[in-house]
Structure formats: C-alpha cells, structure tokens
Image (tube, rainbow, N blue to C red; front, side):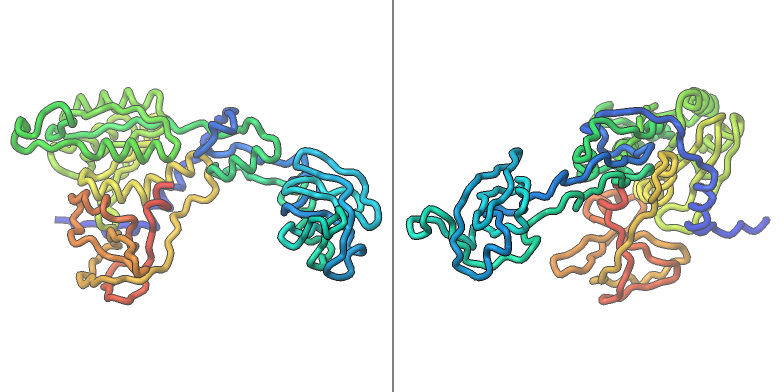
Length: 410
C-alpha cells in the first residue's frame, strides 16, 4: 500500500485556493442606504470639505481672543447663530451667542463654552466670560474631517454603517459596488432530513436533521452572497451530476456539505471530475481535514466536510476569505488577538487546532469541554476560537491567539 501523502498546511491550502480566484468585474449602482455589507467598486472622492466651514463644537459664545485678556470681561452679545444659519462680522468688544455646528462668524477666533459664561442683570445685558480663551478653542476647522479632493473610501472596502455615514457626509446618495456572488448550496446524504418534514419520534434509524444547511445559508448571506438553496441531493451518482451541472450554469460558486471523503457513498468526487476538475485536499486542521476545490465550467466548486463543526470552522478559515476575494475585498485576513487562556489543553495534536472558547468576566478564555467535530453546541456557547498551532499544549495563563466569531463572520 502506497504511503498517504502528507497533510497540507492551512496556510498552503489557503494560498493555493486564493491563487485561483479573480475578483468579479461586474458592478452595479445602489442607494447608499442599501449598501451595507457591499464591496465598493470604485473610490469615493470628496467634492467638498467636511465640515464645509469653520464651526463651533460647543454651545457657547464666539469671541475675538484679543477682547478677553482676563477672566471676568463682559462683552455685549450682538448676534445669535444657530446651526444652519450664518453670522455677520464681529465688531470689537462683542460676542456672538453660538450653538454646536453653527458657522464661526468672520473675525471670531475662539468659542467660550456656556459653562464658563454668565448672563444676567449684573452683566449689563451682555455676557461675562469667566475663562480666558485661546485661539482656535472649540472650533472645528473646515476640512478637519474630510478635505476636498481626498479619497474617503477606497475600492475594495467592505462597507459598514459608519462608512455609509461617511459617504453620505460627502454627498454620495448612490455608490458603485461589486455584484453579489451567486452561490449554489446543497447538501448530500440520504441520512439528512429537513426540520419540519418529520417529527423526532418519526425519524428513521440513522436519520439526522440537516443543521449544516441553516448555518451555511446564514454565513453566505452575511458575506453578501446571493444564495440558491438547492436542498438535499440523494447519495446517487446521477442525481449528484445533474445537481452540479444545473448549479454551474448560473452560479459563480457551488458549495456542498458532506460527500468529500472517500467512502463508497461519497459521489461528489466522481461527479465533479466528470463535469470539470477537482482537487481533494487533506488539510492539517482540526476540526476539519477533508476539503475539495475544483471547477465546473465557469463556476468554482468548494466541498466542505459533513460534520457540523468541521463544516463551520472550515467555512470560516477557507471559504470566507475565498468569497471575500471573489468580491474584490482588499483585506481578507481574519484578525487574531492575544488573550489569556484560563484552561488546560493537554492533548497536543499533529494538526493545527481551532478550539471553541468563550471570554470570561476576568478577561481570560474558557474552553468548551467537548471539542468533538459533531458537537455544534460548542459553536453556539463560544464567542470565538483559539488558533492553536500543531503540537502545542496550553496551560492556564498561557497567551494564545483568539479569533472572535464576530470578526470571523464579518
């Protein structure tokens, strides 16, 4: 018997996977209000300063600093400036009542916040300034946030709520974004039953509910994909070939769960090979390991393992960056941060491990007790995972690399 080939490292698998994908070139114009999660297809360049003119960052009084050499000076209030209005030039020994966001009147060079001011009968109808202002105090300068002609958002950025607000602040009612990837998803396995088809007491021996379909659809949608749910494909060669052929005609990516191993009922390999090309990888990660990548016509094929946690983790570390690059995202790396382990992991593995953990009130990480690839409870209980190198044990107090699920799913 020939020796098994060595397992591929995750880094090598990811590099090889990403080398074969080019960003989609199609784009569309959408309302900025509807662009959350979309990927910019062209730079957003500001045609104006933000703010457009010097304005007050406080409610108070606009003054000329030369008129307030010491605390206690009383100035006459000659104008009132609210946001959306404008003032007139300051005369000597005068002050302007001003509100947050209102433009600074010509001649004023500082704002004294109202907490440092007094008005009343003893102020002779004016305002007493109980603090000596410095030039520029409480003034937001024109272009302080955005300068005219600057690039505020770059092509390849994945838009989020703050970015939409920034685009709106420079007058962008619409944005050019990449087309959403079209992904066909189906599961394989005669043992799979959809929730609602059968009550638990009516399930035949060996049957399980199809959980993978639900989290994969959700993950795909969070990544901005248009998902066609093609359901469960029976463990039959002809049915598998037909499903793949139909999916390849109108989708950018075909994603399957299960059927990428080497069992007699795993029909994905011969079906994909009959229609296109396929590489079956054994990747040195846990949970996970079996992963398939190929092409059917113009469609990419990605095959995940069937165990739910294996499928979940493999999606995050391989499929997610693949789909982001397909959309032209410029930064696709999952960010890990250093964190303190408050648990013991004594079983060093030959594979790189992704351990499901949760942050605790003391600022450390707790470990879910059952790290089996079939225990989906671990992914619900956890708020992230430790990226643990091969061959490493973990003791309480060790510094580990933590990847938050909120980061991995964004």
